[in-house]
Image 1: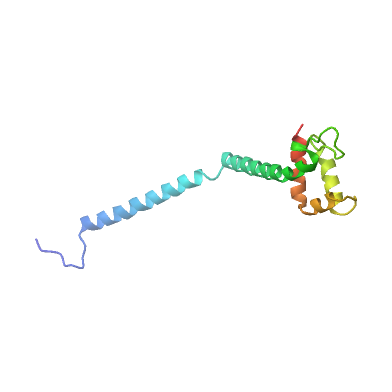
Image 2 (image 1 turned 120 degrees about the horizontal axis):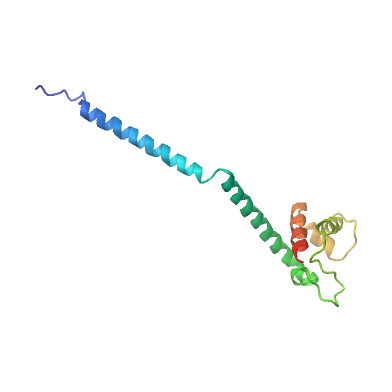
Length: 134
């Protein structure tokens, strides 16, 4: 049997290398498929939506905490307070009031300045949070 020249690869060695590359490609394909199943589909989208809603409600709760000094904890003002409670009031009513303060349609000493510090989306979130406090 004559030895092969150095520049030529044996059939067994060539098959070994091709098999290795095929196996590597298969592993990469399977890994990509598993990665996609964890991040797509109805269940994943629903989970992402719930997490986003939860984060928005937490943000609204944190923003609404700044109202506690005047409107009481969780929007429940003391009975003898000249400032109204906000808990359980309709969301549309609270949004309208805040936007009117923000746009200068309602006079006030503190509320116009506070309302100007929030975007319309933040006002909607805060109003939703107070409306849910029943």
